[in-house]
Length: 433
Ligand code: ATP
Image (tube, rainbow, N blue to C red):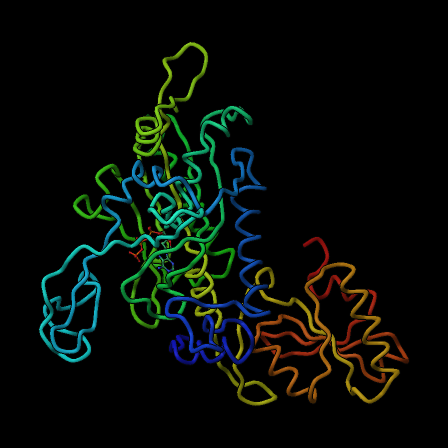
């Protein structure tokens, strides 16, 4: 079902997925903190991404570059000159908005007052390094992870000797001084990206682009995005960056409308050429028998926080089972914070608690994603585990002490089975995962 954003934000807070940033001090707009369960969910998405985009392939390498970079990087990339959004200000209430995101860029969406002329607002966040106060230490917090890959291109080629086509993948924080951070994780000022620069021969980009379209689709399915809510949009030439001959945005139907989830862009040889020019270092690729040349680039750029949001929206459901009405997150087991919860039927019966701990430890030996839960009664525990998306609940009861079986409850159907303890790891999908 399609849930409203307020309901999801409340669930995310109540259950320890996502908290407003610096809440204790009244918050800081555009920042969010991932709580114990959100951190696990996010980690699982990142892990699947590494697995799918790097470990299961032979043409990819990893990178983890610094957030702070020499400011010349951002001159070469074009960010200093052009990384701006059109800012408009309301003459009446002084509200500030991004003109290209308004239905009517002349009227204030909040008070109806007249909006002034748009002016270019720079999105990079500045910081200062070093001890001097003369401006020489001015740096930017990176607004994307991609440039870290381009400036390390030569280091990677010289050390790893990859053959074309090959890709470099990196996950990390990015910062943008968004004019109006909004819609929960969707538009934040600090967020995380998972980016790939895939280097190809100049005449090979079209075919590689098609393959990446398919790869992105199957990754989205694998993390549990509802593909019926995904709309691919071919960006028309006038809206693409000047160096790109093809860009496809993967849009998602959020509660606030259809908007970007991630982008797939062909960037030609723009970045390597510019960094060669600005640094004076030849970044052309060399192989025997041909003139050195700049490889061309295909860039799948995933926003991790938007993925978390889309995964939660896709998983949210409400239904009625034997135990009554409930909220359930139908997360894929691979991304759920916990795959299995283990309970003693009653917390005040030491034999049950001891046996439940034994079962818990045995399952943990197969996979770390197992939680022990003895809070409240069984009904409350099921409700809590449904709401955080745990696919299986295992209950140790008096019969377990007699015959070595436990009750296994399936999150999606709420059906219960009796399973011998030694068959548990297989029954709850912990074997071979
Ligand atoms: P938008 O048009 O929504 O501002 P963009 O086209 O500028 O996004 P890109 O520069 O292509 O975004 O960044 C790549 C990805 O990084 C986006 O698809 C998105 O998933 C993520 N991203 C960009 N800006 C933000 C933000 N402010 N908050 C969260 N994620 C973001």
